[in-house]
Length: 254
Ligand code: BTN
Image (cartoon, rainbow, N blue to C red; front, side, top):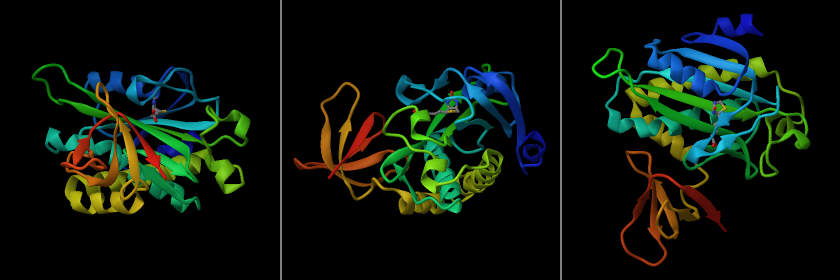
């Protein structure tokens, strides 16, 4: 429904019928110098990109795949908070639509322990010395499939399954873009407020976790908070100083 999307405040929405990856499309446009605010969405993403060099599968029209071009005017050391910022926007969207979602660090959106949405933020450098410089491409994949057999993996869920009714995907996207604009402003101007919102929505902080760290042995302990760089702070069971986990897989332990 391109007409409704065309009037989303603050964003310029383009709909493409089919593409390997909306993140790839927006990254290419970012490298060409396109201004902040471009949004690309598709009905059919054929080779989606996921976190940790994984893929992201999406049956046609069974998910919202969207990528947003941002050029944040904040110091680069704060950019690692962008994926968490996007997670806040998605959870607020999903809650507004009536599903009780939470955020598994860093930004998996879970409903009843199942993954509803994945977020991949990629940094794109501009040509050396050029203006505008670096950009961030925020990619969001939100499952909307009607039935469980359309889900990419058995541990996933969808907005339609959780709410018990088909969803209006245009409506969801319009709501998401509104929350993204609000969360993005909060992150730039009132980072403490955004961090507090993240903390309220987190289902990881306060839990016992096992973190699989790239190139190291696993770390088991209590998740105690998020640091200013968006890393998960874990107090090891074996004692010693808290460890800040920046990448890798985190599993919740009961
Ligand atoms: C994850 O691994 O959890 C993140 C998945 C991110 C998927 C989205 S779908 C829209 C955008 N385009 C891509 O190629 N990936 C992201």
